[in-house]
Image (cartoon, rainbow, N blue to C red):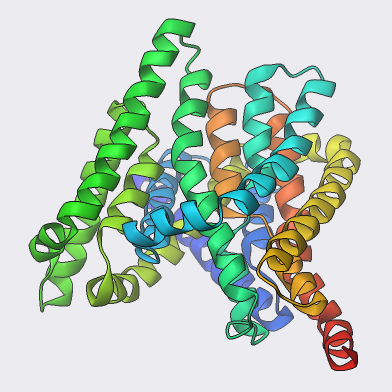
Length: 386
């Protein structure tokens, strides 16, 4: 059979399968991310139906998925909001960083994986899934609650931290010397600072350039600009994902809303491909030996996120029911965690890191929304009693 025909057949089967899994997730009321990861495990090496020729094609789609995920996440904020969040919620953000990065780093060090894997695992356990958390807030009607701005401010702080963290991680994964690494990190931080400054001072000019009354032209401009900046960021030792995130930050207002609406189907398509690709890189046989460790790490992470949410909400003067909701909303892991693990696995940080991260995200991406639904009646009862 012709090579192109095989690619189309395999890729079509993957997409159709993802559509069916997504429908099942909607019916069950859970995030589809765990099911997408399972699909990747099934289609990868050691799975029940390994792909023969389309893995390289899917890898390109996965890279696009990362760029589009971070681009649309950046569109939710603007540079002013990022700066305001950094200054007003710095203390809670630092508590979030310390409490939730520590479990992953300590776990990697105790396992003897070394400092590079420890830095990667710190990121895996640190970042909350903005996408899953936003869906939880919407599905349960928590968007208008008093604690929701606190939750969103922590997510913004995490995103900004990722903009600094990812260049440092990629430098370490590249195995650069101390001097070369310091220079690369310096260039990365300078790049991030310049882009933020441009977004603050000249965002209106960027918006004027990108803006178009025609949806097709607007989509082409936004995606084209994001890919150009992502490629440039990659060349400067900054993650392509961070470059796309910063492009999203530079666009705001009605333009950002229009771009989000246009990008949503494209983002969902390639994001699903990204989660599948991560699963393709993980041998299912390696997950079972680390399943117990992943469950323990997930339990510790749930506790640290609950403490983080309670601390941040209490500082904002929110009652106990709201503190509990804030903590629960921060539990899910997903996009960023898999991005970080994917970078580490691709660079060969440690052979078991991908399996541990996949199992960890599977647990928290599924249990986070489920936990919120299960405890909602209890939280409502506490609020009424108070």
